[in-house]
Length: 343
Image 1 (cartoon, rainbow, N blue to C red):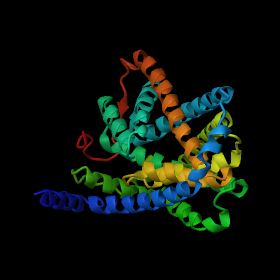
Image 2: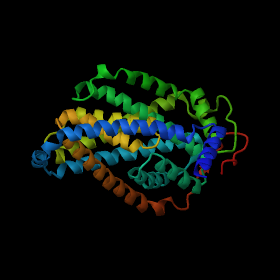
Image 3: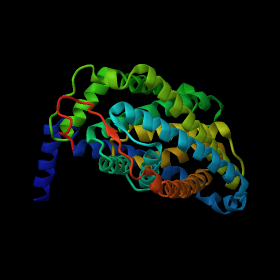
Image 4: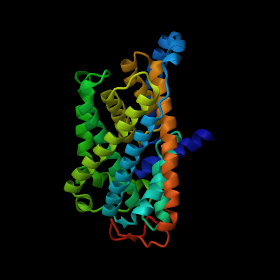
């Protein structure tokens, strides 16, 4: 019976035009097992250094204040960029609404999987009158922009980092080129048509629609903005390293953070990306510290710190709730001629 249900779900996925569930879980599972295997191998080799590494940890709170300020500035900027993308997709709302929804859904990043934050964002914006396809297309564009920005920032910082020399990562140039090609109006139009089929309504997206909705000039501005946001987060990671670790390297913080953010966004359609992201960050930081155990401790501290930061942002978003009430968002039709078929 379970097998019949699984086959039925896969047939539904095929009929809708999306990748079958078994394929997504298969690819995601292989990547996760590969990262996990490499990580466990390094940790087992370094396990004897555990006692000595404990003595190297320290606590200096003042860098965390700088980290929070810089990361919060980046958060305010990324929400502004998101509001511009969603505005172009056909839904306008006040900045307070965007701050509240972005902050609350960001908490879902602490859960396993990559879909909870965008799924929550779609649900909350639908309460504000937005159309599912508009929000979904904006999320897709943001994913691509963050992925490309992460690869660019990695390329800029990797030559000065201890991990993954650029000569050994030539394939990243190919990945960046493919990701950039996904920003082409025709490619975005194909992704939007796929999203429409996955939604089960079969609504067509006219040729050239994405060129009008997401003009290349604005896409370039958004890409530069996302690059600034990731750099701000990289500085936050650097300050956290200063707060707890025996040493900190700005290039290593930037490269490890940027590369794993690129992975998480470009592979967001796969399950288990949280393991790939965090495990990859440990592997990238291990050469800098000379120990995978120290790198794992730093990454764990970063995850705890990010949860606390996101909780503070959620508190700010909840405090803006009275300001966001009573607003009447304007939701435009991105896909004609049926403006309500996805609501």
